[in-house]
Image 1 (cartoon, rainbow, N blue to C red):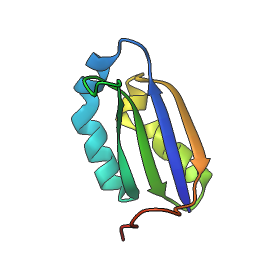
Image 2 (cartoon, one colour):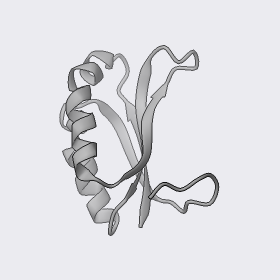
Image 3 (cartoon, rainbow, N blue to C red):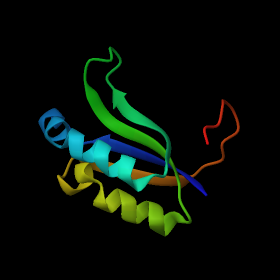
Image 4 (cartoon, rainbow, N blue to C red):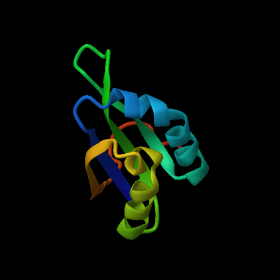
Length: 95
């Protein structure tokens, strides 16, 4: 089942994001469930300020557990993290 993770960073938290970026990327690569993902940015693209991932997992409980253990979340980066069931309708599907 697909879920969209919509995470918003706390204000003025770029240092937390950068300090935990490598661990965050490794965590999701190792999880093996990401279909697409990347950071949100300011309108000029200069500053990362959130994350969006579409993941393929068994259920919402699994999605929640993954978010809770994300190094960004554990470091206190996220102001909020929304998890919503999602249906892929447009665009090329990978794998």
